[in-house]
Amino acid sequence: MALFDYEQFKTAVYELTHIDLNCYKEKQMKRRIDTLIAKNGITGYAPYVELLRTNTQKFDEFVNYLTINVSEFYRNPEQWVYMDKQVIPQLLKSFGSKLKIWSAACSTGDEPYSLVMALSRHLPLNQISIYATDIDNQVLEKAKAGLYNAKSVAAVPEDLKKKYFTQIGPSYQISDEIKSRVTFQKHNLLKDSYPKDCHFIVCRNVLIYFTEEAKDDIFSKFYQSLAHKGILFIGSTEQIINFKQIGYSRRDSFYYEKP
Image 1: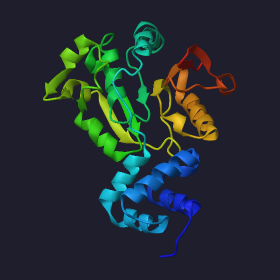
Image 2: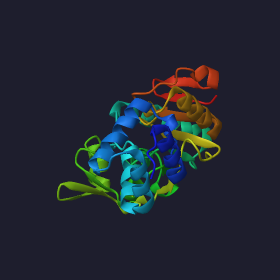
Image 3: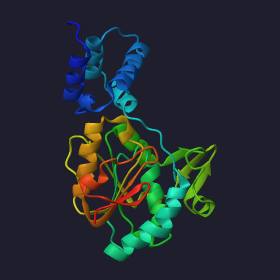
């Protein structure tokens, strides 16, 4: 097989996975991929693409490696306090108890399960429903399993940890009653269509890995996806510089509303 360069590799990856590497910061992503290829004892992009085509395990490993899966429950707890005191009451006032909530790029499920627990302080569990998506099948499987290490659950409020987790050795299993409130599905933020009329969208600490053009596109799509008076919650490492041009009003440092 003829050798080919990184540009051709990006094209081949898109054909295989529908992940568009052009939307990621190139230096950072190329370095990560080169490291993985070397780790597999392969020289060059072409033979690695051939391996991805023929080896399901290596294909899954590659997708898992590409997607950044650093996640934990109640990440940045002070922002969840603001959600509890300000955001959820406002959403319930605006939309009633049947809230349409999307946890985008949900990784291993820490965030959507945190949302269920946060909402459980305001609503009965049987009235809570979260739609959670990620591009990576492996992390979605981990999310459905609902087994986490101590570091992941460290910030969960003690009463909720006691109520909804069972300790199994060093790990923590989340309860079925929380798991049953979340529907997981594969979704590519750069390619797939977005759900409509969402009341609350949570997408945190993911877009920092994208180019400015890709970020603008995604934040605009989130805006279109929100119902009027709907709210977007982003990560503490992120900001929407042109939020006014898109149409958002700023509720708080990391909360943006569609007026």
